[in-house]
Image 1 (cartoon, rainbow, N blue to C red):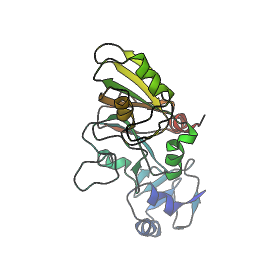
Image 2: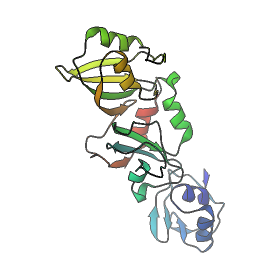
Image 3: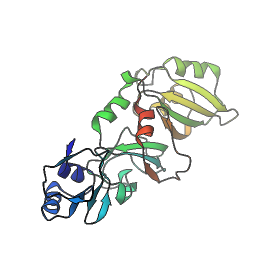
Image 4: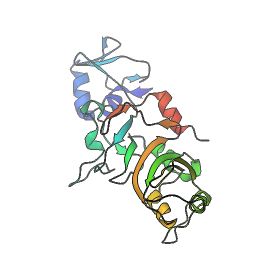
Length: 238
């Protein structure tokens, strides 16, 4: 059970003070009944709330899947560049949204946006082994020794040691496409791993977090709210 005023404020762009004023003025109904008690507690998953006659979706936390396009930075705010948060539609906006993990400016694909700090920490911590799956297009043919180096845990040019990665060649040839699964997120990690193995990444896309794949119906720049079942596919730590 959570305080009604806190839930409404956390679920949208209204301040706590603005919400309390709406409640005091009778603009908020719970299951069709006006409540003027700002300390009234409700179960956000089992209650109907309207504000000024419009249905209001209560969310303690929000989890958003974004299909990130190129040229957008993975940050909550930036004075010069467009951020992933700028792409979130107004109806999904909440206070304190941030990307749970970063993709490079020119890397595309699945970015998880949330306001749940504990959840983000758990899925990003390497010790919890939540895999992030990428598809990497390479500049040159990939050799078995290079694949083995990366899969065993390659050491980068600056001495940084990477945990073992899971690799699968999806398309062979001059510019092969390789599936890469890692459970950590060092700076430019995948690009640096292949560089250390004597190759280069020319395109990179994140296609899955945990067991939740990027929705193929989302075009670049589009996003959607995740259901609880979808969130569980991310956070069920193995």
